[in-house]
Image (cartoon, rainbow, N blue to C red; front, side, top):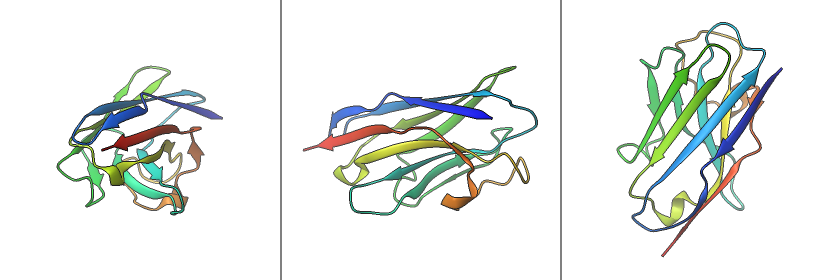
Length: 129
């Protein structure tokens, strides 16, 4: 069982920055791709950014490319993932989730929301003008 806990959400003005953190603990072995996804009110959950186990492969939704940066830290028993969000826009408002895929290849970063089988509880990001 893997537990994921996000932190770092909050209210920020348009153009501002936030850094989200995700701590993954529990039974962890092998290489797990990690991702950040978000859900805005009235909209479906969508992929934001993903990173392979090694960190060499990353992928971003077109809407955040150039503004968001995903990274990770693979310690012995705890995984950390970070999402640095700059130049925030009102459209970035939503609940942000950290997720892990514990099967498949460690280098394959998937945009498929349903491919991630462990999720955190989410952290709210509100961008105000």
